[in-house]
Image (cartoon, rainbow, N blue to C red; front, side, top):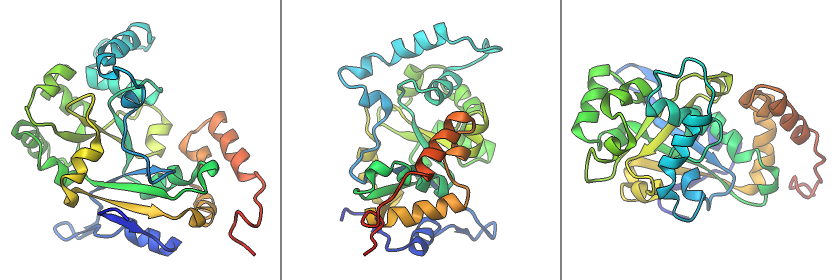
Length: 270
């Protein structure tokens, strides 16, 4: 068991751990400061798709984005900034330095349990405290959050802070990470309650930043033998591919998984 790992023992335990410390005394409401990211295997790092590209990926970032903007045919995109383009590119599968997160613990649990081929592996929900993480930002970024009365950034806010990734990376000699909300481009973004993390370096690994400051995160571990129970209860709560990916593709993925035969052994039954 790694530092900051919490292994749950039941569905109830999972919910308790994901919603722990969500009470905000100043506003008298339950509002978690965590962003959640679900992975089907607890051994997976927080690698961006750009890093997973391999090779000298950090040298390819500008080429990928330039050609994406060149060939993407998007109406009314003349006023888009680099942050709009990054969010759109990430949304449509281009390799970028962004990582997908969600405000919803249930959405994160969906992604930790959607791949039935990984039910022999323990899953994980990374929980990152974006409020505390943002306290470590360069002063100009912290001041922007104070001015806006916000805990996270929008693409409009970031566009006022940095007009290019080079400007963003050059803000401070020390690496930093922040969280921002993508524009609501379509129903998928809305349904997944999405936000992104971005680091001021294309080759930085978020794991390395978080482990240096244990107070910034926790990992909720889902044992493999609990995944089927959790998956069934999520489905009954209507947290599934049909909702996460509106359209015929999501519908088909949901139906294939929902009606796949399950053996008694795989369900942990005698």
